[in-house]
Amino acid sequence: MSEELEQLRQYLETGQLDAAFGLLDEMDEMSRDDKIHKIQSYMHVLLIHLIKQAAEHRTTPSWDRTIATRSSGFPVSTAVAKPGAGTSRRTTSRKR
Image 1 (cartoon, rainbow, N blue to C red):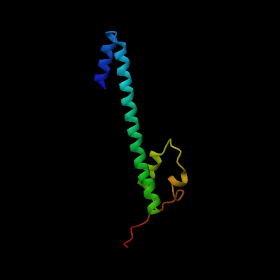
Image 2 (cartoon, rainbow, N blue to C red; image 1 turned 180 degrees about the vertical axis):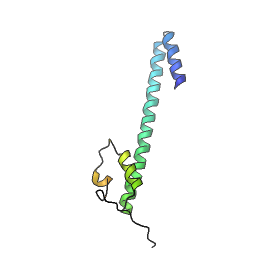
Image 3 (spheres, rainbow, N blue to C red; image 1 turned 90 degrees about the horizontal axis):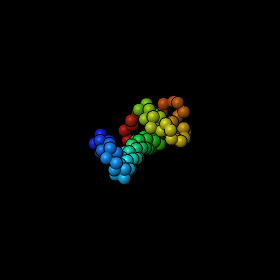
Image 4 (cartoon, rainbow, N blue to C red; image 1 turned 60 degrees about the vertical axis):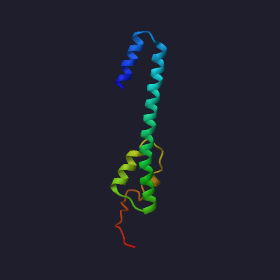
């Protein structure tokens, strides 16, 4: 990023406004792509934990923390995000 900022400064100092605007567009696109990647990563982990809860009919403190932090700001139903409404449904593994 510092290389891009130095290049931008050079463009501005030499009056190359079209090149400066082009570089700003590239930097904006890189920022957007990075944000999209981060959102996808957060949503992937959130979905994995929600699927685990639904499939295993249990939860763990770690899953609850992940779901709480990863879903903040997203409209997730509390019935889906927090099974048991505050009570731990942690179970022990059973041999089949």
